[in-house]
Length: 274
Image (cartoon, rainbow, N blue to C red; front, top):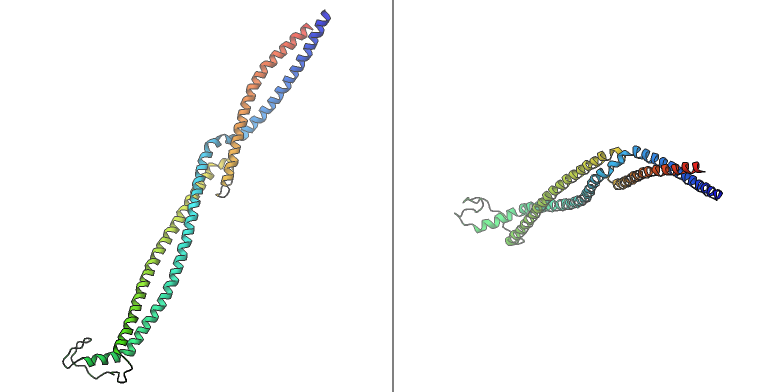
């Protein structure tokens, strides 16, 4: 009976020794993991503040994206305005040339027909009548009076009126073109100023983000910033996970020490009885 009891106690001792060794090895592994986690947290301590700075950096980047979209619209608008301006300049140049030709034609036509018109006018005046042109009563030598009948006063005056009307229409058209050119150039100037302001705003926001993320030594530009922020968010999540794991391991180690003490006491007691 005593032999059986002793064998049972030895068996229990062996089992408890195994449990103790297992618990000691587990504690060693936990301690090693704790050391690794502590080293990681120490080396990456800046990641702890990512939770605070990332929302601000993301907000600035969202503003940069909105500014970029508005900037692209303004650049497209500017390009269209410049195309419209170029078309108006071509139209203005064309009409300037047409007006010049008409004015030259009016001058030539008036010169060619001045004598004829004066002669026709003279025929209508009686002695003592005042000339409607100069106001004089003496009319001097007679001008040619179209003896061959090749010219008609109504035709000449009608042609001259038509040329003058064409000139007036062109002048009005050119005045409208010039007014539109002035308006387009003002719009172009406003668009260029707006582009400059948007680009300055973008640069300012990018500089702010760069300053915020300076501790992480990352390259900041509008093309890759979202990827950078996503990577930093993952780093922040990893840091938080490791912090939580470290906290749990410390709690486990504290509990394990108590269990080890109980197991050691039990093993010591069994050794004495065996």
